[in-house]
Amino acid sequence: MELIKVAIADDHKIFRKGVILSLRPYTNVKFVQEADNGVELIQGLPVSEPDVILMDLRMPVKDGIETTKAVSKQYPHIHIIILSMYEDERFVYHLMENGAHGYLLKNAEPQEIRKAIMDVHEKGYYLNNFVNRILLKRSHSKQKVIPSLNNEITLNEKEKDVLKFICMEFTAQEIAQKMEISPRTVEAIKDRLMERFGSKNTAGLVFFAVKNNLVDY
View: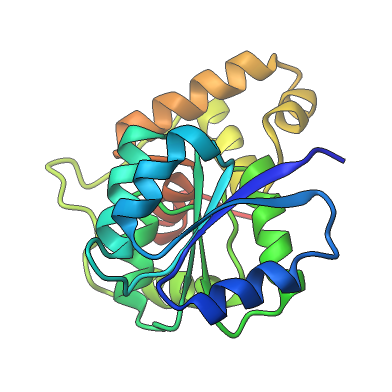
């Protein structure tokens, strides 16, 4: 099983050590960096080179919100999982639309943290029941969510299929097999949709698709 390198940023050392200890049984997860704040995290990234970051929100010097935005801009290949005590849906939406690939509450079980790490590394995002409830709530809201001159978003059939399969958590290789196209074509369509909808990563693309009712399961 592929080794996944993980960094954790949280100013509570006891919590950090607890997370690391709880994931020790999973031999494919290796912690390569610990940080007390966002500045310390970013400074260490060129050396630690993590695949995934577990990020707290409330930290001194540079908080998790600003750090997530900075990391997603400077290191777009690194996947970020928010690990926070905040259940406010505004935090969830803001973070997921600005570079985060998953959002967990700090009472999450080690098994779920490990699954989130695996999913964001392999699929590009992780959506649990907590986040899905927020998505469902927002999708039923009458509030307009897209400031656009064109109220109707049109997709061709291939774009619809790729978007649907992405939301169903299939990998590019799996989508390519189902649609009988190349993985490179799948990635090209995904990149085009992300650019069109202003999404910074796969998680943002899924968020956009669900909250704007662009997919039917």
